[in-house]
Length: 140
Image (cartoon, rainbow, N blue to C red):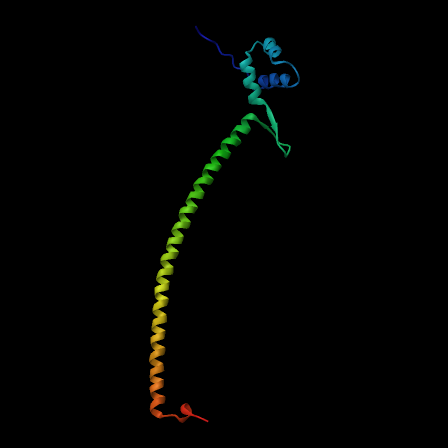
């Protein structure tokens, strides 16, 4: 049992779809051109058009391609969001390490400065003390 499939050209398919859109019933078109109703329904889905808000006319094939492209872009978007989240966490960890080391360094600088000021104060105080400056102990 061999089934011979007839190949129809694009123009013929589009003509039949146009006939159906112009008001002819699918069953009458199928009977007149001796094709199955499933085949005609497939062509109608394939060659039907959709008008966008911009006035562009898209075929079902173009809509399907756009849907696939949109799904791919959404997947890429999700991957990029995850990558950014990982990057941000790593940056925050690096910043914490920097802040801790910077804090330790600043504490060391404050202690060093305090020690220097304390030493300078004692040297100054000892210098004034042994000079016995009278203006320090004025009582008017």
